[in-house]
Length: 365
Image (tube, rainbow, N blue to C red):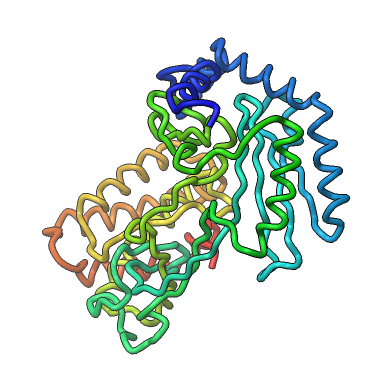
């Protein structure tokens, strides 16, 4: 290594401002007005004008004519994104026709090379999704919960198989011939050396680089690109995807909850002009109907009904007001415990079957 970690951090602090996050738009603007950011933009534009870069790509294409060499740094002339030249090389003669990725830093004399590996997981699902009444419902509970789902013998609900891809700095035997030839050319052309992964993954205090918030950026993010997760999560941190459950497989009690929620959200979203013609989010529920949630949605509906902004809102205001008065009276007489009363479920069923929801936005299947 030509630099210590401390020296690499000093380089980062020359091109990235201290203590400014990139979350809020006002912070982004302040970030871009700093001297450090100005230096980084200038460095990117200088790098884009360096003829050694396209010459390197041409030599790689000539050396490996059956590979596809992809230049991922067309943006550099604009002064935007990254602190490195980035390219990938397809490896048609390797198992699975893999791809190698390279980043050559122009702030520091180092480069990275790595592949991607797929890791397969087989787990019990911990959450599921169901479409009911035109609304996407996300349930952070097991689909094997007998209080929610009837078809507990369905093998599809017992396990979910999924794969996650991770960066791997340890190259396989069939990747090495490509990587070694390209690495020699990179080193001869730019006078740089390969950065050890344990150095590149060091966290950088008090610096942000989109999309990394303060304290989350690593040396690789700042000196090469922030487009990847450089450290794979531990198995316990890998989020298991949910499964989809058909509404016909739900218990009666759960259906009652979803009916009431679906009716309320159909009303709310039908009054929102920004929701028209598009899928408008979803609703998370643990399977329990709570009085405070109903009151919150009703309050928002009342605000939007006072000033209807859509043809549906104007034409249907009288009918909607009658429906809202009815559910408000039912909620007022409910103790808020357990499943919704039969009268509330009947109201929701009637509303969902009415023409009032015909123009409400529907969830994608």
